Amino acid sequence: NAGVTQTPKFQVLKTGQSMTLQCAQDMNHNSMYWYRQDPGMGLRLIYYSASEGTTDKGEVPNGYNVSRLNKREFSLRLESAAPSQTSVYFCASSPGQDLNTEAFFGQGTRLTVV
Amino acid sequence: EDQVTQSPEALRLQEGESSSLNCSYTVSGLRGLFWYRQDPGKGPEFLFTLYSAGEEKEKERLKATLTKKESFLHITAPKPEDSATYLCAVRYYNTDKLIFGTGTRLQVFP
Image (cartoon, rainbow over all chains, first blue to last red; front, side, top):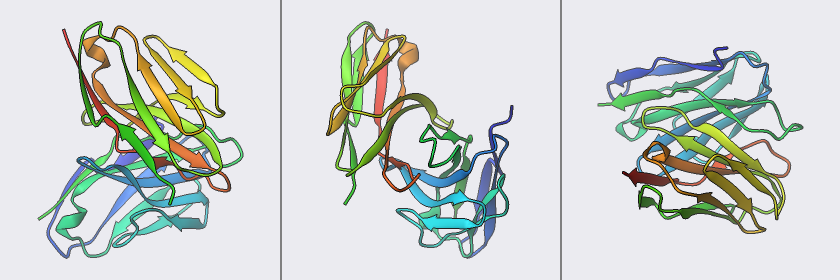
């Protein structure tokens, strides 16, 4: 069971470059999430998707776009990377609103913007 | 504004020295409170879910409790392998979003 898979694991970008972080889950979950984690800040929600074709902003959405390609995949795009976006990014999934159970996390993508 | 606050930020314990971590929330209409453990370089790993005030859950040396305004994670006779960052998260009504606190970094020394 792979669970939640994120790619890449590490990435270095130059300021102004764009990139897409990929996330896929194999648990048939409805809800998917993107978080960023910075020292002393905990996990902050960037975007959330309750189902295929729907997305909603979280606490820190500025500078990011997302796409829920299908039920399995939820991608996060940085159109013009900035040093302030240096962080560790986590994708997560959960069964859905009706079940109200825990979310499962990927192993993270460590992004550095120079 | 809905908030989740964890304290202390960091905690150093001697092996066997019991203590408690706190998670307080101002979320209205709580649907569930979740505790996670996170080891360095890894994603958070689920520990417990609590749904209503008065509920308690236990797993090995860990016990989680919930009141109307806060949750405690009690660690009894901790071992060095319990060293990690402990995160709490809340989910409130009409959404499936999970909002996290900033975490407590626990270090247990032999």
